[in-house]
Length: 91
Image (tube, rainbow, N blue to C red; front, side, top):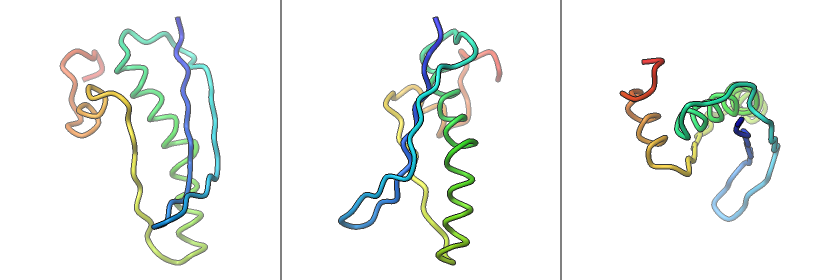
């Protein structure tokens, strides 16, 4: 069974949210765990949507922007913050 990656990119202000892009795409590989599928989805979102948009927006408004990455599982959030996961074979 293949997982689906989803990304929602938005500019957020103090009292506003402006959506820029959204995408949902079936992953090309079968993951061995839910956390692995989430890491693949986060990688896709950052490489395909976020980094290009961030660079573009920073050039237009001529200032650094702050990036918040949200994750819906504690295991994946821990893996992303510590950069380690004993159970994933890629370590």
